[in-house]
Image 1 (cartoon, rainbow, N blue to C red):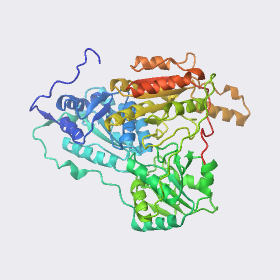
Image 2 (cartoon, one colour):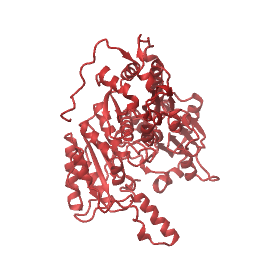
Image 3 (cartoon, rainbow, N blue to C red):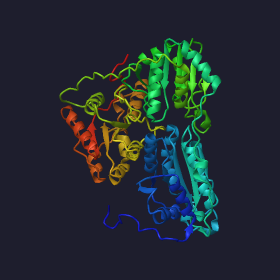
Image 4 (cartoon, helix red, strand yellow):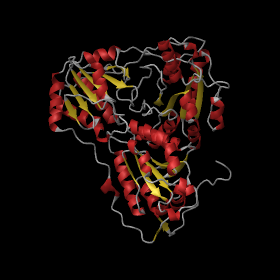
Length: 587
């Protein structure tokens, strides 16, 4: 901490004059937010003062971020661990524009958060010249309305408290997502002469997840009881260990085969005998064979279930009965069809994975199969020395992380499938959601914060591409300020290789020079010093790893340091390539 920065605020003054922002800050405290992530801005100067001088910077404590998109990313990572919203504050229209990419990621990822915005006085006669004219926007929520569950601009402090209560309830109700509450400067700075009487908070709690309808549940049971070769798509779910155990029990009870989506958080143990392998949107190999040979299919809130069905069973081909479980349709809208194709299912159960799986287990009754032990993967060693390939890094990381309790917060494009043993619901946290490059570092910080908040000894590990890392770089500073144990493992090919790969394909199709693909794609001349940048932001960062001979020891050292509480960046120089195959073939 800077020598001129106090360790904490002075004690709040007793019986001081109340302002509208004091009531708003109290509403955040009442909801139990441990932190609020923000990049400071004058439009919510009243709320900032209330957080510090009325609440004493406690519950919530301010997490000062270098960019609004990082503040939102930290909240997304936190929610990926805890399944609950964290508070964020963004400054005026400009801060909201900065934050919007992160909010889109959270929307597509179905992660909850409460985003507090602010604006200059809508009453133009009260605006300061120039600055409050450019930073005041009519219907500011319209900027993010296409990818938030709800937004509001309350007209009084009491209404703002109500908006926060409604927003938290909606954000945390599944399908979850971000909500946005915009505060006029005037209501923040309004003097409160008499404290309003508010109803108890438990009267506006988020509702419990719905139980499946009896008729649909019975039809699903009829199908599954007759099935000899059922298949389960293990899609969206919470990080609940109970839900995790129920999915395993259902697969074992049915004798089903399973798959998980490489873009979604862990849905089933990858070392379970029922697990065939990860998949993306391309269904192929053993996974596709098992789907097409199944005599019943259960889709548990699968990502883009409609197109998955069409890829597995093109129109006009024979298919087994399909049971679709999802309530995601509650938040579908026309701005962006992130929900994918319309699922054509024989039975639709309009609720969440956990309540449906538990009801199916109860309905199936006896005949419990003995629990099947998890297996270990036989992963080949890497060569003794030489250039590092992406598959080499995946294999070396697998061996170095064996037996360690980690949460992989993300993996780069091109990472091999079936490259990580995942045996716990916190073992893998999925993708950014909306594909917004630069979110990975902030999500990792938020995940590490969430792990600490729930009292877990797991360590956050972000496996990032160099493009994702450099775009989100300054968010790693918060790992240092919050003293969070986290490893940022950079697969550094000095390229925005996704686009380089596209240029190769376009040139090949057009009969043009493929060797020109790196032009306009490479981070060279000079190459950024990723380790040096990390050290300047307060993290540990050894020298880059360039040879296979040094990779195993470097990974072991980095994981050891994270286990000891360090925040560390490890720059591993890899070939510019994608791995189009599995690291381990499962049957």
